Length: 228
Image (cartoon, rainbow, N blue to C red; front, top):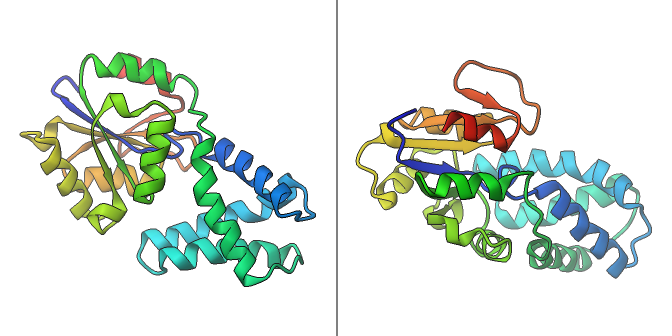
């Protein structure tokens, strides 16, 4: 990878510790709304529902509003807890509002960014919502590392759609896609999305996805110092 000049990072699950920050946010909200369920019991139901609905949202099969409301509605239904629809909307809004209040990063994220920042031009491509993702980046002191921050809500499509990778390539002012490397945790969105659009890719396999031979696979961020 000697010719790499531009590195594009995914944000959630790659740099920003989504699981930990989300868990802390829900702990706060369950207490605020006096919902009588343990945090771990809630998360055990919520996480697979959220994962499934996010995949549908990524594929443009549901709206942002449907995602935000129904991931909570379905969770409470499975827990046999009745919450008024209006209260679910309030919890949903509060979740989005307070999620960036917690800003734990994956292990060695800052160490690796300090190292890469001196050698490459760094960018972010994220499938998150504009306001939330920008707040996360600012609150976690990541903004200084990145030249371009590209989010799916601004572009109008989500990874792995070719349009978001082309948009990222154009705004980065890279001169050849062979100079571009995508680093992310999602095989379909980050790895194959990048490869199918002419980028190179490194798969941070933090979700224990199936092994493959389509790209380099790493299990932690610090391994990037040995590769790049």
